[in-house]
Length: 385
Image 1 (cartoon, rainbow, N blue to C red):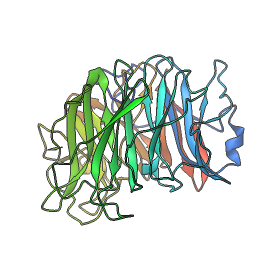
Image 2 (cartoon, rainbow, N blue to C red):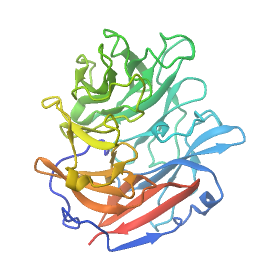
Image 3 (cartoon, rainbow, N blue to C red):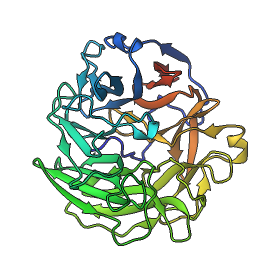
């Protein structure tokens, strides 16, 4: 079951809804990853696997280009030696932007897959069956014959272990152009790749530079992305489907908000039956929520709760060992927030998390946060009451 798909049940007793702070913070480089102090690290992430392994992933620029690395935490609490995820050195897209971070899917046991856009205009994914200690040679997800702008892959395992992927693809645009673009899908089963254009029946384009999201939990596929409507709005849409390849047409998941003829670079995610994203159409970056059944977008926080706080990046799912928590990280300013769903409302669990936080994982009252501050890798452990 995919850890990035958020389940909605009660929080662990270690987390109190409405709490606005943490008792203590432990900072410092994790044991075994001291080399990251002197390296140039981009888009770090922490993820729990189904076997309880905590996996750290990140991207580095090297002499040959850009690479993705992974390191697994061992039983003694240390991280093992980093392994390169991309089998061909220096071939990962070198553009440093948080939205371009690798996509991670957690499968059964110690299975994990990582997908990325590479420097040859390809979308690739590598699978590990040993908890990130090694990765098989990457498979190419797009099956296009010619180079084109391709970016923002999202991946998810289904119950049978097949890998499902979506990404933005502008193979029908002018050379080098981001739009018009389509949402492409691929299924990887027993090493074979089957590709499909999910938006070929619509015009003019999907939004070309907002991250996508997919979940294949229980073999039911939910995909969300920013669509572009005929009247110029660029807001979240979803496509649903089955693991055997039956897909719906795109459905609007929000009423029109973003009317500027440009990309907000803030992709949506799915949490339960809702879609969440950050939006700047009012001139202030706000966290928004809606759904297919209730497409009228509404703010996550009231005016009183919002205050002077603004979002800095789209919401992030917090992975857990047991997969039971409904926790989202909202990177923001002046501090980031942790929120959880309680009934029909999202409540603040903590509002004093560092603004550099990009990714998080939670176990036994500990919240592990990673990010980058002024070019330097950051890792902190927060203890909740």
